[in-house]
Length: 346
Image 1 (cartoon, rainbow, N blue to C red):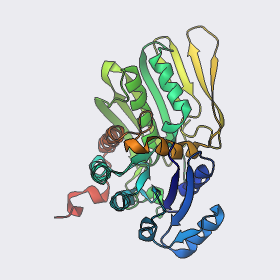
Image 2: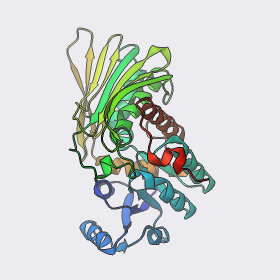
Image 3: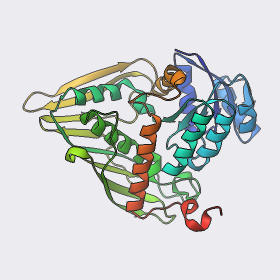
Image 4: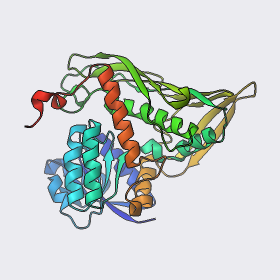
C-alpha cells in the first residue's frame, strides 16, 4: 500500500482519535497539524510528537510534505476546507457527515474529481473487517431473506445551547452527528440483500423532537427499500439508546453489539448469529490495527483509484446517504438556518 504523510485540519477530540490511529496504522505518518491558534497547534503537536505545527489551515495546505489531509472541523466548515485542500492537490479524508446536505456534498465530490484527488467520507466503521464480515453473512444468506433492520446511535449530552451539538451554525443535532451511522448501515445491508453495494430507500418517514435551538434532540425514522425491506433507525443527543444494529431475516437474526466503534484500539469484535432453533453462534472478527488506523490504511489502499470501494464510502454511497439524511430532516421539519431562502446568496 502507498505510504502517506498526513496533516490534520482542526484539532478537536476526533482529531486526537485519528492521530492515535495513524500511529498504529501500516501506512500513515502524521507530519503536520493545523489550528486557528499557535498554542492549540503546539499542544497537539507536543502530544503526538509532530514537529510542524501551523496556526492556520492555509499554512498546512501550503506544506509540500503533506500528501493527505484529515478534515476534522465542525460540519458546516467541511466544504470550504475540502475545496481548498483539493485545489492544493491534497488527498482528503473528511469527517462525517461530508456536508450538511446532499447539494454541498455533490459540489465537494465535483471538486475532488476536477482536481484529481482522493476523497472519502470518514465513516471509520465502514473500513473495519467486522462490517465486511456482516456484508458477507447477508450475501451468503446466513439468515435467509433480509426483511427488517433496527439500529440506533444516540447519547444524552445534556442541554447546552452554546455547545456544538445544539448549535444551528455548527451543524448540530443527532441526525447529522450520529444518526448518519445507522442510516449508512441500513443502506449498506439493504444493498447487500439486493446484490448491490448499497441501496437508497424508496420511502422515508420520521417523527422527532426539536429542542430549543431548533436542532433534533431525538428522532426515529422508518426506511423502506426495494423488496419491502424495512429499517427503523434512531438517533439523538438528548437520549441514550442501545446503539446496536440488528438484521432480521426469514431464518433468524444477526445482532451486532458494537457496530459503530468496533475495537477502537484493535482486537476482537463479535457478531451474534441467531438462526432458527440453533444455538447462538458468536462470530469473532479480529483486527490488530486500531480502528482509525484501519481508516487511514483504507485511504492508502484506494488512493490511486481516487475513491474507496464498498463497504467503505464511495462517492455514490456518500451522496445517497446525504440524500437520505436530508429526507429524514425534512420529515421532522428540521432545516438549518443557512439552508433557508432568506440566507441564500443572490
